[in-house]
Structures are given as C-alpha cells and as structure tokens.
Amino acid sequence: MAINWTDAQIEEIVKKVVAEIGGEPKKEAPAYNSESYNGRKFIGIFEDMNDAIEAANAGYKAIRSMRVEEREKLIEKIREMTRAEAEIMATIGVAETKMGRVDHKIAKHRLVADKTPGTEDLISQVKTGDCGLTLTEMAPFGVVGSITPSTNPSETVICNSMGMIAAGNGIVFNPHPNAIATSNYAVDLINRACFAAGGPKILVASVKKPTLDTANIMYKSPLIRLLVCTGGPGVVRAVLASGKKAIGAGAGNPPVIVDDTADIQKAAKDIIDGCTFDNNLPCIAEKEVFAFDNIADELIAGMLKNGAYMINAAQAEELSKIVLVDTKNPKTGIVKKTVSRDCVGRDAKVLLAKIGVHVGDEVRCIICETNFEHLFVQEELMMPILPIVRVKNIDEAIEKAVAAEHGNRHTAHMHSKNIDHLTRFARAVETTIFVKNAPSYAGIGFGGEGHTTFTIAGPTGEGITSAKSFTRLRRCVMADNFRII
Ligand code: NAD
Image (cartoon, rainbow, N blue to C red; front, side, top):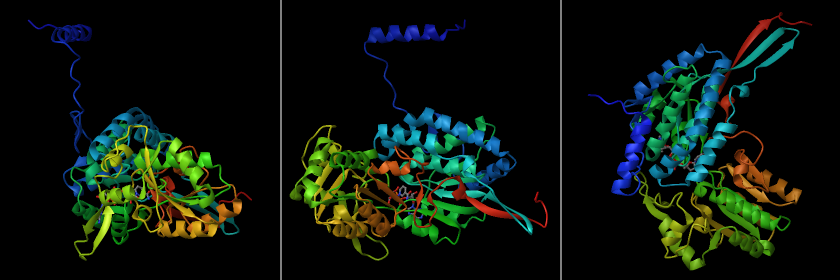
C-alpha cells in the first residue's frame, strides 16, 4: 500500500530520527562543477566551442526580433536573480578559486545587479539640416566572444552579459579555467533569467573546459564579430593580435598619493577599506602608497587602528620570497618574479602565518615601509599587502606614483585637499579612473556616482564599459526630406 506523506509529516519523522540518533542532520556541502550545481544541469554549456558559438548565434537571431522594451525585461530579470543568488555565487567563487571574501563578493554581485546600465544606455542621435535628416543608431555586433578573469568571475560574466544583451548581442564566454564552475553558474543564471522573461532558451554560452585552443576557435570564428577581454597583459595582447575588433581591459597597479593637506585619519581608513575589498582582487584596488614624510607616521597609525598589521623590513623580505616566485618564460627562457597563485586574494592572516605571525580576523591588511624599487611596489600583487613609500614633496610623489603605475593608465587614487596637487597628478598619470578622497571602489560606483563595470577598458579606450561599448554605430540618411521646419 502506498503512503502519501505530507511534507509536514516527513519533517516530523526526520526530527524524531535526528533526536534519537543525536545531533542535527548533516548539511551536505553544495556540489558544483563546470556543468552543474547541486544536481541542476547548467543551460548553455557545451563540450565544443563551435557548438557554443552556434548556440549563442541562434540566441542572437532570436533577440533581434525582440522590442527594446522586451530586452529590458530580460535585464530586469537578470538583476532580480543576481540579487537572489549573489550569496551562492560568492560562496562558490571563494570555494573554487580559494581567493577573496564571501561578504565582499556578495556586495560585488549586488553592485552589478543595481548599477550596470541596461537599454537606457543606448541613445540614438539625429542631425537635421538643409540636406534633410541623418539618424545614427547603436546596433548590436552579433555574437560577442568574451574572455573573463578568475578574480571577479561571475561578476564579470553577469556585468558583461547585461551590457551585451541590452545592446542586442548573443555572447559566448571562454572563462578562466580556475573559475569555471563559478563562471558557468553565472552563464546558466543569465539563460534561466532570459528564458523566464520571454527570451530564447540559450542566449549566452560557454564551454565545459576552456583552454587556449577554445579561445583560438573563438578568435577565428566568422560568427564572432567582437572580442572582449578582461584579464592580465598576456591575454589582452593575444586578443588585440587576433585581427578582430577587440575591447581590452587589462592589468593595473593603482598607486595612492597622500599629501599633507589630506584628512589623514579618513585617508587611512579609506585606503585600508579599498585595499582589502575582496582581499585586493579588484584591478582598481590600492596597491602601493606614496605618503608625504611629514604625515606618514600619522597615516600609518590610522591604518593600524583600521585593521592593518605592520611588518618590518626583514619580515617584508621573507614574505616577498613567498608571494613572488621565479617563473621561467617557456619561449624566451628568461626567469622573472611573478605572483604566487597560492597567495593571490588570500586573507591577511593566512599570508602572515606563512612567515610565522599568527593573528585573528581583525587583521585585514599587511602594511610595511619599503623603498620605491621594492617588488611589493612594482608588482601587481592582488593580495592585502600594502607597501608605503615616504616622499619629500608632490614632485617626488607624482614622479614615483606614475612610474609605479607602469603606463597601464588604469586607475590611480589621491587623498588631498590641494586642488593643484590633485590636478597635477590626474594629468600626469592619465588613468581611466582617478579617485579623489575615497576608497578605490568609489571609482566603480560603490559609494561613488556613476554606473559600474567589471571590464575597465583602458588599452582600447572604452573606459568604464556599458551597453553602448558593445554596439556599432549605423547611419541612415534621408536626403532633402523629413524635416518639420
Ligand atoms: P589572467 O590574465 O590570468 O586570465 C584572464 C583570462 O585569460 C582567463 O580566462 C585565462 O584563461 C585567459 N588567458 C590567459 N592567456 C591567454 C591567451 N594567451 N589566450 C587566451 N586566453 C588566455 O587573469 P586573472 O589572473 O584571472 O585576472 C587578473 C588580471 O586581470 C590582473 O592583471 C587584473 O588587473 C586584470 N583585470 C583587469 C580588469 C579590468 O577591468 N581592466 C578586471 C579584472 C581583472
């Protein structure tokens, strides 16, 4: 005889059994991989990159016939589901990559949901004159091929997708292999959201196992009309050499200058807040400080009050040998120091433990005084280690900060009330983002005005990318007509 238990009855039985055997039911850790999450198979994930491209192309064709207002519904649903599933993506992101912090990753997903522009970003232009009317509209490219990093994996997939879909494109991703489960979770979320809001079953696609070969298929496919790459210098170079129209969002090494007119206590807190956001993974985060000598002690004292831990020169040397390792270029044979992947995005206390210093969670940043040549200043560490270099005056501060930025023209920060100093540094450093008197994340709309992005395209000039960056301009001319005057 079949018994139809109600949910309440089942729950009651489970409670009784648990009470008898003692303890709470064991909570299984969520199972995730590049194809599924907790047994739910992802939509839009393919073995073969060619199939992924075909699927995204079919999705693109499907949304071509959708009205802008219908496309905006897809974006709205993506916002809603990103907010609802932010915690899941943040948790898998940290578990899979071993980098960053769950609470900060949740905040990053909410930022993407709230402040990534949708279709309102697309503005048509009209020119009228004696010869009639000319209309310029922002059209989709077709299928966009996007390469995404391990540092903000799902954030970048979602932010890119929102802008690219708002612009009317389909998308195929070749995500970072070390963050493939997190990235493909986001791909699946976009497809679930779009389908639920009236879109095609697959609009965004990815592969089960991304490699350099799958990236190459993407570069060469005639169906891919635009490449968008967010990552380090190597991949940006590769994409720009592809022969296709490409948007490159590359590496940074953001310097911070603090002069003696700044509100020093606020500067200390802002710098530690920005530097430690998601354990320094964002490319915009403060990476090295140039402090006027006459305020440096006060600045350091303020940082110590805000969760910083000061190490001495010997400890900095010891730590640098752990976080920077010799790596041989397989082509040239040249050995260069590169950041250890085992240290990127790790908690300050984990890094300190590597040199025998044991602290609690209250320590969120490691600070040290170094000279300008120190590798902590020169290399983009992407971990909560902040070197501080003393400078005599604004001339030395600007010269050294510009040199430490290495011409990336990515992001720079300054704490000062002297307008001349602020203006001089902004002009000299020529970065895409320049933040004055705030933590770095104000530059991407977190506590600052303006929209957000996780693809800051310095090398190719689109800047803080949004839907309009993923469009091509098309002109329609009506000669001698269509005017009302
Ligand atoms: P990474 O450069 O290691 O990888 C980025 C992506 O490129 C990955 O998907 C990787 O698999 C792929 N890749 C690497 N070499 C490739 C090649 N030759 N051809 C095709 N694909 C290739 O980046 P990461 O470590 O995940 O991210 C950190 C870097 O990205 C930092 O330098 C950071 O500053 C930069 N970044 C920049 C932005 C921005 O908006 N400008 C945003 C995030 C990260």
